[in-house]
Image (tube, rainbow, N blue to C red; front, side):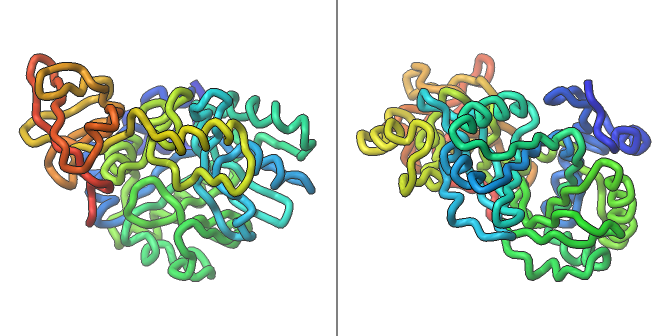
Length: 361
């Protein structure tokens, strides 16, 4: 197992560390519900330094990115970021990612930790036609997610950048917590606002310490991956390996909005035909009508008890106090308001298909 540059800090804070994507990662400090509430109502900090970062540079950088990603990266100006995915050749998804335009001919791709090698190999395969400069900088960089409605107020003293002026999915390269050049990105995986800070490994301890000093009056706390999962699920954000994978198409997963046919990309012709002919199954969001907690891989059944799908993500929502989940079902069961059932051990629990996000605070 690899450690992040902050592993000893997490241990000193009493974090419960678990293996995740090849790293020892903090899953919780004082409990998922209280950590979840801290981010929804205040400000919390995640160490997500396990994420992967690739730099794509040169005259053909954009052409390569346009080939391998589903969204239209030509829309990006310097200082803007974009959510996208890497389609594979068979209708599925290699990974989802964020694309940052750092300079005119330099892009940063931020990918999921468990997919770093797979993504690198996939993009490299197509780069044979473009010869863009590719650098995997994942091992040398750290990433902190400072999330919550009080993030701007708590962090403003650490930078001369006007944090409130950075729009969602925009970023600034500037000074922060005494470090000259970091990426301050108005992105996150929680739905409660805030920032993500990209810095070098040897800078992250200083930033972490100053972040907690600045946030002390705002009740800032460290947050683990368990709360990150409940927060993202309440927003309906897909998790690679659960809700999307190499066999789920972007359209089935509700990611048509990041799939742009204004350009050609890997498997775009087949995906265009899928869109034209209609989907056989869709990723739905559901809330339990009765008590219970849906979990990953639980069966979704119809009113007669016949299996029609599986739960891809599920939890007891800390914000709402009810069981929520995502799962794939045949299109006929996908309309909002449709009734389905979740098989929780030996009990069948009624559920209703709802519109995302679950949490609308």
